[in-house]
Image (tube, rainbow, N blue to C red; front, side, top):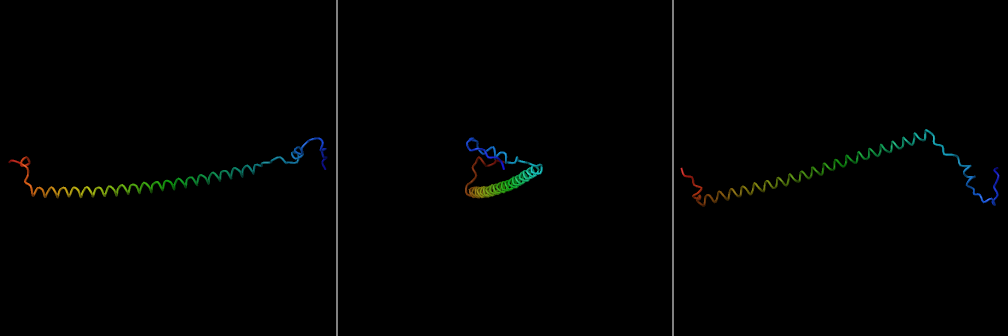
Length: 110
């Protein structure tokens, strides 16, 4: 049994506790396991980031495709509108030619 120090000495129990604590032992197996766990964690993180990037790319492509479809639809509608206006103009112009004689400056002299 260890000798007890007198209470009047003013010392603390810390030196006794320090003597009883075993030094930390880190074995090569522990280091190897820690490295493996870290590598596995990094691999999981890499896979997760790759999956997120692929999902982002897919969503980005979907958004761009929908925007393109929208623009093509607007372009098609505008083309039909212009075609209708041109046909109306030609019809109106054709009716005016029937009603009104051609101006003299447009007549050709042979």
